[in-house]
Every structure is written in C-alpha cells, then in structure tokens.
Amino acid sequence: MRTVDLITKKRDGGELTEQEINSLIRGYTDGSIPDYQMSAMAMAIFFRGMTPTERANLTMAMVHSGDTIDLSGISGIKVDKHSTGGVGDTTTLVLAPLVASIGVPVAKMSGRGLGHTGGTIDKLEAVPGFHVEIDNETFIDLVNRNGLAVIGQSENLTPADKKLYGLRDVTGTVNSIPLIASSIMSKKIASGADAIVLDVKTGDGAFMKEMSEAEELASCMVDIGNRVGRRTVAVLSDMSQPLGNAIGNALEVKEAIDTLRGVGPEDLTELCLTLGSHMAVLAGVASSKEEARDLLEQSIASGSALDKFKAFLTAQGGDASLVDEPERLVTAKYRIEVPAKEEGFVAAIAAERIGLAAMMLGAGRATKESQIDLAVGIVLHKKIGDRVQLGESIATIHANSNSNDEALAKIYESIEIRPQPVAPPALIVGEIK
Ligand code: URA
Ligand code: CA
Image (tube, helix red, strand yellow):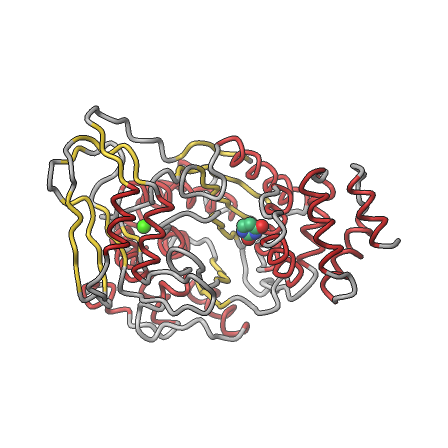
C-alpha cells in the first residue's frame, strides 16, 4: 500500500491494520517514508484518534524499531515504574532501592533529564564515582546479585519513537493521547519490563493538567500494556505543587536518603509507598497492597532499604559513605532565603514555574547540550495549606552565582498566599488497572 493511501485512510477515520502500521513505522525508521508524510499521518491521528488495537500495534512496532534488552537472565518478574514528568520528582531514587530491598528485581534503564532538573542518572552522578556505563552482562549480573542496577539508555532504543517525537514537537502533534501513550509504553517495553506501574501526574506541573485528560492517558496506557501481555497499573497523583521539598540534583539525592531513612517529606514517602506496593504485588512478592506496604514500611524502619541503596551505589563505583554523611554531597556557594511578603496560608506553589526557577539556577538543561550544576536548586519550606508569617522563609535558593533575581522573581510568581485557610490537596487522586 502506498503511504498516501494510509494517510487518507486515517484522515477519513479508518482503522489501520497491524501490517499497515508495521510498514509505516519500518519505512519511517529507515528513511523511506519522509517527514512530510509522517507529519500528515501524525496530524490525522491527532484528529481521528486510534482504536485500542491500533495503539497496541503502534506501540509494538516502535518497540521493534530498535534494540530491546533481554532480561530473561534475571529471575523473577521485572517491574518498571514510569512517571509522566513532574517537578522535583525524586521517586525513582527512593523506589528502586526500597522495592529491591523486599525482593522486587529492579533492572532500570534510565536517561538524562531535559528541563527543570536532571534525570535519575544526573542525580545519581552527584555521588562521586557512580557510573552507569556498564555492559549488559554486568548489568544483569548486578541485578541477580544485589537485586538492583541502573544502566544508561541504549542509543538505539525505540528509534522510531525518537524520530516521531521530534517531528511531533514541531508539527503541533505532541498532545495526542494515543501518540503519547504508545511513545511512553514502547520505551518501557523495549527496556525489558514484564509489568509496569505508571505514575500519571495531574495538575499545574504535569503534562496533563486536567484530571480528565490524565485519566484518559492512564487508561490508554494500561490498556496498551494489558493487550501486549505486560500487566500495567496506573496511579494518578497530584502535581499541583512540587513533590517533596527539594528541586535540584544533589538536593534531591539528600531528600531520597532522608526518605529511605524514614525522615523524608510526607508526600514523597506516601507516593513511594503507594507505587512500591503496586510494584511488589505485580512482582508477586506480596499478595496484597496492604501486605506490600507493611513490608516496605518495615524495610525503611529496619534500615534494609538504606542498606540496599548503599550496596547499589558501591556496586556501580559510587562512594556509599556519603549516605551516612550527606553533608559531603556537593553544595552551592550561596544560600538565599525567600521571605514571605505577606502573612496567611499558602494557596498555590505553581510547580512548573518553580521548576523553571530551578532551571535558571542551573539545575536543569535548557537544551540537550547544556551542562547542569548538580549543587544548585530550591528547597521549599512550605506546602499548600501551611500557615506563613510575614518575613518567614518560604524557600531557600541554593545558587552558585550571586545574581539570582530572575529565579527569585519566578519563585515569588509561583507562590500564592491568601488570608483564609486553604485545604491541602490530596496526593493520590486515582488508580486505574
Ligand atoms: N513523553 C514521552 O515519552 N512521549 C510523549 O509522546 C510525550 C511525553
Ligand atoms: Ca523533590
């Protein structure tokens, strides 16, 4: 079939067959289908949507467009977690050792971040010596021995998605639920996941700002996973304010250590226990969420979660003694307090703007080539609903430059204080399986 016929078929609301989707993705990946035809197809999908079968077929076609990692050498059910963006999201750093400590094998492929803070790998590199440049054999061996390892993302993971995402970015077709869902699921499946727990964020700092859209995206991803034989569960969580208190790489490593020690922020702890419980059930190490949660809480209380984090850092060359002395993590030269300009109750902390402020300080990458400063960032002292006094510090800026007016202005812009009491938002707002 000619590509133009596939485009007109979708344009007119038809359903593409598995074979048609495979040939489209194969042709686009090898360059025989040009960008202009794929742009037209993406726009047709944007307006016409995709059937559940088409979405599953598109996902698997993208999985097979490049390398897939074979984790069959690791015994047990490999459960991966994915969060759809978010600001100051430290969950992976906590969850990986936490669930590994109760017997869930964690074989994680991670990338570097683009945007407000670094990705998991950038954050882990705040621990001197830690590296993810290990070969597949070592990776699998480490997971078998320690229950946990992180490897850098293969350059050739889902190349069709990489190319299509770039194209969507410049053709107004990013915001299509079937395209987002298949993009995310293809990467998880190509990275070897047998089962997947999704953390779909909703609210200001999220990709899907409306609850209804977040629910639709979550259902769509769960449906794809289940159709292609990967049990998938989605948790919907609030991102109307940053998660935890720290936004910035080394600051988030410190926050993760606190959380593994049992003294971390309440919201981050709760989200990790919720996601971790689902992971443990999917992996078959607990028979119910309640049983899983007990195991996870005990692991934090007994110190096994923290020990697992240390063993993991050591195995990949990191200086694990930092975990007991987090004050030795890189720190920024300047600390600037952000005093409240009025008294009252915190009504909003616009997560996206706080994220942007952190990026201005150097915590994130504006472009793929930017260097990130691991030491800088923002630590919030207040959450929505908290009372503040006039002049009381709402946040501390950690900076390596002494001119931070722009970041400071952004922080003020993002925080709203009202005279009347404000109810804190619920953190876990839904679950789809
Ligand atoms: N994140 C992805 O990985 N893919 C999308 O399409 C959107 C967000
Ligand atoms: Ca955080």
